[in-house]
Image (cartoon, rainbow, N blue to C red; front, side):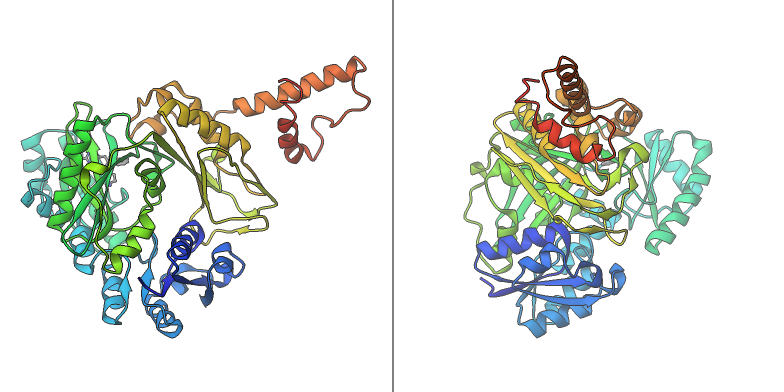
Length: 504
Ligand code: MV4
């Protein structure tokens, strides 16, 4: 195992990697921008080095500087986390060429999966099902028309260099195709510096189901089942779960074998994820492979009972995976809610400020992967995801109830967060039934963000009413709190804590 690893990231994932290092007896070197000088990942690491001003392109994205810091501090490996440099093949290569270990796949595997058209070709060659469509960039609108005609409308134009939905255009009628192609090519050129666009048949209302894989340097490639990731808004996932309510053990085995075949075809090593669209008829199609540890990895850890980040480090150090595929059977149910500093009542506008009070949920089956604490300054330089709240329980209904309980315990004051939105979401009958698709959340956004109070707020109001009634009857000596006082937000959660004692 390594003696020292540089963690080239910030926030919750930097802490997550530092914790894995500590449990493996590996020293962790944190890096930080000037905005993160007092961040928890800096304090928890064994050493920390400032790498530049707040903007990512002057700090966390400076690959050469990170390699320099690794050399200077004697770190043997660099863990990139997710985002930032995690899927830049040039960085993985530069790390290797500096005589260091990149805790992730080989640069060649990142490259092979980086172009969507190349990934489709590779998948087809490996017998992996992909959505009907092309594997080469479209030359012009005439070619696009001919191809679209061959498998019928609607079709989806996608940027070859894309990912995360950029440069995508749904085309429902032939007469819209030429203009949409021009727009997609311009958007792709702007976003990726590459205007290559290809076309697929557009699937209506599928689920987004992804399969976790682990591969070592010695030829063992295993899958760790799936995660259901359909609940997303503008390509940002909000809630993930494992397993998927739509996946039977037989389908899990087929999707898993398919993911393993794709990983093998790419020469994959380390942790990775194959994304699939799962159609309502049970057919599934490979979309792309994420060549990094993902935000939602904890739900897989909880149902499969292993530490994926520790295994990333072990694999990078050359260890063999000591597991058999058949030992991976999901146990119980896990759900993750991404707690972001966004205001659901205001179109998910990013919210900034200082965390003035933080109370974390705990108790059975609750995990908090966070990057914030009391006093943290939330600005606009980085991603608004503050933390992930993850629960594990014996069944899906129990996991939902546990998540609701944990969300009610959570108090974040000082910035708006997605907490109340998650409570509303988990109350919805479709979500409780697992009857969701990639279109579900955006189709229900209005009802989930309308001014109607969530059950938490109703409960508080009931407590206030009960206390007021007691006071009126002379059963309380003095009002504990006057409704509508300026400290109402802060006091609200204390009132909530009184509900048991009041039998509410
Ligand atoms: C699709 C699709 C429907 N049909 N491809 C979006 C991001 C990129 N990873 C692929 N995406 C999609 N590809 C075909 N042929 C619908 C989506 C899609 C989507 C996929 C996964 C998760 C969320 C999504 C939200 C909108 C569209």
